Image 1: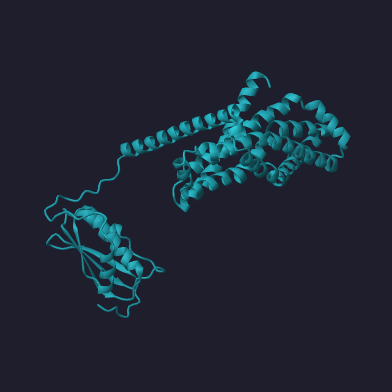
Image 2: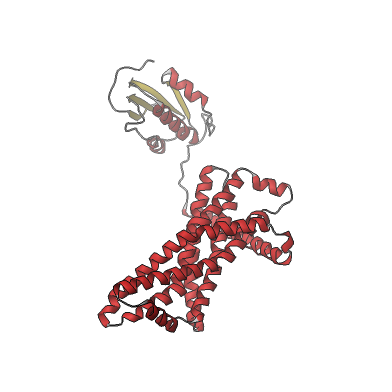
Length: 385
């Protein structure tokens, strides 16, 4: 059947014949750039009928066509065979039939005497069960991986000669020294923003000098460690997930297990160890630049000299406030490393799965940091810190 000159839009008519068959007639011009019919109409027709044993697909006034027609017929065939009926495509052009014959049928059609096709929607109970199973599987994965990380760190402490110190120092450089510019820039800007907002309010009450109290407490207790951790989540945590995910994709992790090497010791321990050591140093660095940013705003907007600013800062900020931020930074570093390594180790074996693992590491890391910071705030408030 040769295509005719026809510029009408693509169409597919579904009709039920007297003998129980369902007939689908395709026509018009089929193009991926145009608007195409939906194959789900066949499913509605199958539901409305009494279980037809045959669905006939033919062409009438068919114009030009491309792969969109083939894709539509394949979708119809899948719906029909899933319901236990036979899909007859003899009325289509020979080229279309040849392409369709090359694609295997995913669901084998039932015999002519088969029962009525069943198109039952997934029940809410089944969806709840599947969701619960996924959550339990994720919880089991977290528990198992967390235990492996604790054992790996214990082996580093008990047997430091067996630790790969070269990899550890390399990871320290990547997540520590290489992160100084972006952490410094973000921290300084955060200090500037907080000081500027505080200056506008405090000036109304003649309490300009207390801008040092606000900036100092906010930076040392909260914003310094948190901003450093969030920056490292998007920078280092995502890199960990991408690196380890690509190793999973390239079967390098399987090769390590084949040679009797623990992947957690080889891949996770150096990264976890590096972030546990570097995050407190980055937090102190972020605190310093955040305070410098606030001091510049206080000098430029409120005309407070740097000596007066730092004198008030020493009065407002206690050593305990600095230790509070350092404790948070250690936990934040563990969360960032854990999120990136966990998502990387559980990545699928495809490039899309590696991208999803990278995104999941960033989301998981930021969510974990916010939750941990909220818990720390409640705990420190209870103990009087």
